[in-house]
Length: 125
Image 1 (cartoon, rainbow, N blue to C red):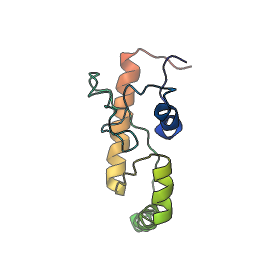
Image 2: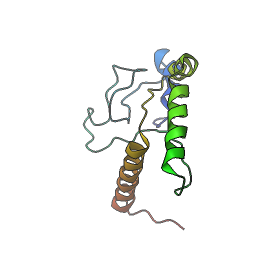
Image 3: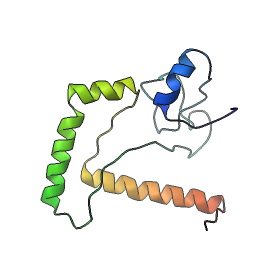
Image 4: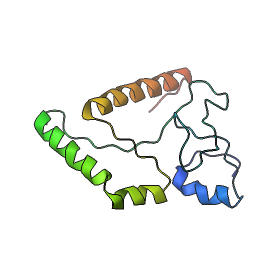
C-alpha cells in the first residue's frame, strides 16, 4: 500500500516500528497519540480537516429532559477511569460535546461533506 487514511489506533504501532510513515492526521488538531505529526492543514492542504468521530443519536422527538439524562450518564461513563484508559490504548482523543454542540457539529459536517461531493462532481446511483 502506498497511501491510506486509517483510524489512528490501527496505525500507531506500525508508525512506531517504522513500517509506516505518518505524513499528517486529518483531525482539526494534532492527536495525543502522535503529537509530532502535523495536521493536513498544517502540512499545507487548506480546508482538509476530516475528523473521525463517534456519536450517539436518539429519535428527533425524544424529550429534551430524556436527552439531557442520556447525555449526563454517557459523560459520566466516558469520564470513568476504565473508559479513559481504554480510549488511551487506542490513542483516541475523547472530545465530549453537549447535545446542542453535537447538533451543530453534525450540521457543519454534513455541509462540509456536501461541498466536497459537489466539488468532486460525484454522482451516486
